[in-house]
Image 1 (cartoon, rainbow over the protein chains, first blue to last red):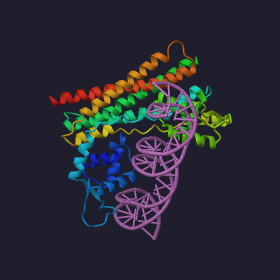
Image 2 (cartoon, chains in turn purple, orange, blue, green):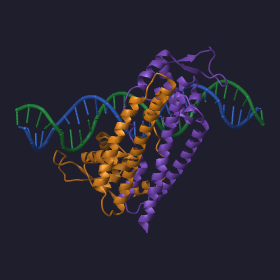
Image 3 (tube, rainbow over the protein chains, first blue to last red):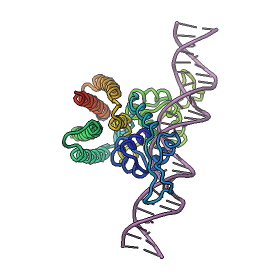
Amino acid sequence: MSLRFAILTALSEKSSSGIELARRFDRSIGYFWPASHQQIYRELDTLLGDGLIEQLDDGTPPSRGNPRTFRVTADGTAALRAWAGRLEDRPKVRDALMVRIRAAAALSDVDPRAALEHRLATHERTLEAYEAIDARQFTGPLNRAARLQRQVLRAGIASERMWVAWCRDALAELDRAES
Amino acid sequence: MSLRFAILTALSEKSSSGIELARRFDRSIGYFWPASHQQIYRELDTLLGDGLIEQLDDGTPPSRGNPRTFRVTADGTAALRAWAGRLEDRPKVRDALMVRIRAAAALSDVDPRAALEHRLATHERTLEAYEAIDARQFTGPLNRAARLQRQVLRAGIASERMWVAWCRDALAELDRAES
DNA sequence: AGCAGCATGTAACTCGTTACATGATTGA
DNA sequence: TCAATCATGTAACGAGTTACATGCTGCT
């Protein structure tokens, strides 16, 4: 249900074609709402059907250098505005690593170290990437929109930092326990 | 794919009936792998079919005071052990609040404050609950299993703390921007 | 001429959610 | 005895994933 609004948000920032959207999802919105191009095309169709977006139509069929471009309609903006103000439950956490550690607790011959190290490495990489974006995109005085976008990025950074710290802590705890 | 192993883990800790499992998921494993009773019953059937669990059968049909009880088989333990050691990708984040904030960045008349305050309140509540569990369940010297379980709980605590801090930070930033 | 990759999809599947059903049993 | 709730499900739906298909176009 949020994918449509993620797309409306992305299109509000800039009218785009399907692939452009898919690529922008990979780079920015997708950090907290990932979506494949298949999903995006499907949702674009239903958004068109609902009149929340429209096609900048030049009559010619879409092709390589001439992709379909979509723009948010007034209805679309209204729908996004209404949705953005609503309250929702927090997203549910589903983390298989925690299940694995519980499994290791139940099965004395399972060692979760490799899983932890693997996870630690991914968080370190992601943290670095986020910090690079932060340093590159948010320098100097920021307007309201940039400050809000930055706040979202800061959630990602805080989350990655916390996971890096937790993974290290858990590994240290395992080492301590062994000796 | 992880639900089956979450169930195997729970049953490894203690053989149980369907509802008992559902309740234990609500209290502990469900914090990082939630599951409804419908899901659990469905998965129990397929686990039975795969021979990874078995029914402690007393012949009588299941009823109020006499529920079906399930136990992990040797195959089930082996499957869990094999799965627990595998490496996996990190779980994908999908957080509509971040989409809402991006929407607020794109639409100048959307105020994300209420959504942030609501979210902050839920994280404060959850943090309190986790800390209470930590204080109650993990006192004194701990064996390996308890230490691992505690580490999982500490991930939850660290995560809630980080969200509480981030929500407060974001709200403060909004206040600062206004004046 | 041929291949990489652009742009757009379709189809099938998995997993989770929502809503409802049913018989048994305990407690007021 | 009547409501609550225990214990176990079924059915339909929704969202996301995986795998594959197709036509076009610029590059070599």
